[in-house]
Image (cartoon, rainbow, N blue to C red; front, side, top):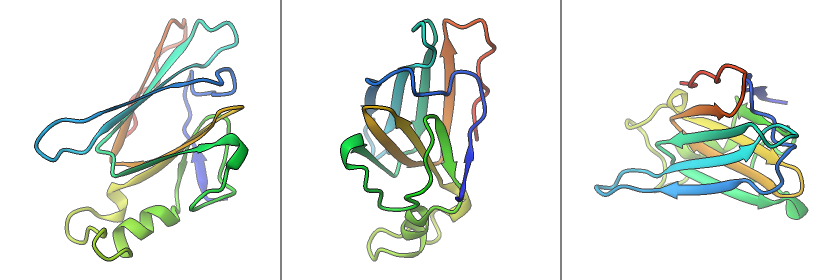
Length: 145
């Protein structure tokens, strides 16, 4: 496996089978920002917001048809970063017309995956993310990158 679990309070996904997904765009050719909101505790008292910024690519896969374009064995019911992403390598080195030589380096891009039981999986390639946990006595997770 080629991933690391993003550590922090409120990142477990197994307690919510229906996360809220929002994509927001701005003018001027800026890339979208994605937000996933889900309850990360059994009592539904802890709401987690994961904001992905400068998104280049994302995909949702239904849990009944989980066929991944890359890194098929990299999965958790939580937030992971795929550290040797075949999808990122395609963006940077492959795909004529879609590669970004001189604009972004492979180290600038991060492939995150969130798996939800009875819902599916979100894959996101972006430059950074921020995590907020509300309604919890636990301290919020610090922003990543």
